[in-house]
Structure formats: C-alpha cells, structure tokens
Amino acid sequence: QVQLVESGGGSVQAGRSLELSCAVSARALRSETMAWFRQAPGKEREFVAAINWANAGTYYTDSLKGRFTISRHMAQMTVWLHMSSLKPEDTATYYCAVTKYYGSRRPEDFGSWGQGTQVTVSS
Image 1 (cartoon, one colour):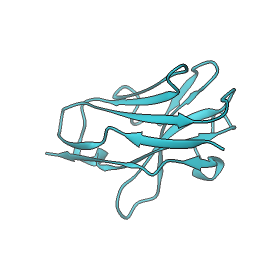
Image 2 (cartoon, rainbow, N blue to C red; image 1 turned 60 degrees about the horizontal axis):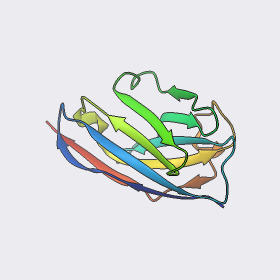
Image 3 (cartoon, rainbow, N blue to C red; image 1 turned 90 degrees about the vertical axis):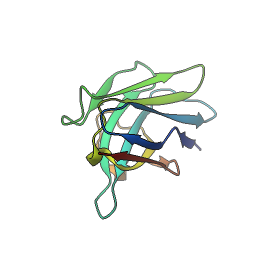
Image 4 (spheres, rainbow, N blue to C red; image 1 turned 45 degrees about the vertical axis):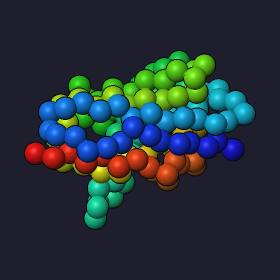
C-alpha cells in the first residue's frame, strides 16, 4: 500500500515558478513509476510528467516539457514537480500517483493517488 501526500500548491502570478512535492509512504519502492497529473475544472485528468523510482528515467507531456521538471529523492521518499514560467492555463489541481507501468500516461494504470494540491495562476 502506497500513500501519497502532495503539498506546495498556491496562488502565483503568471511567469513565476512553483515547486510541488509528493511525500511517499510505502514499505518499499523498487521499480515503480511516480507521476504528476493535473485536472482543471470541467476537464479530464491530464498527464504531466513521470519518473521511474529506480533509475530516475523521466517522460513528460510534450507541451509542458521545458517548463516542468520532475525529480525524486530516494532517501527522502519525495517526488517533486518544479514548474516555471507558469501560465493561467496551468491552473488546476495537481495529483501525485504511482504505477508499475513505466511509460504509461493513462490515469487508469495508476493505482494510488494523493488528495491533490491546488495551483492557481493569475494573469
């Protein structure tokens, strides 16, 4: 059983940066993949980025690559999402999730989710 707790959300102006963190509680993580998704009001949940716990391999949704960076710290059991040059369209609830399927971008492949953290970007 993996428990995930996100933090770091808030309200920022466009162009600024924000870093989200996801604290992972698990007996052990081996080759699982940790990911960030986001969901804006009235829209479907959208894949943002993912990282493999074992080898730190990453993949991103193309439109966000370059502005968003995912990373992890094994000893701290934490996954981060650094977001830069934020835009109003980045406004959403951001969720941390875990899967055993590296490369997946489908929410249904992710078995554990955090409660989400709200990010609001004003113009």
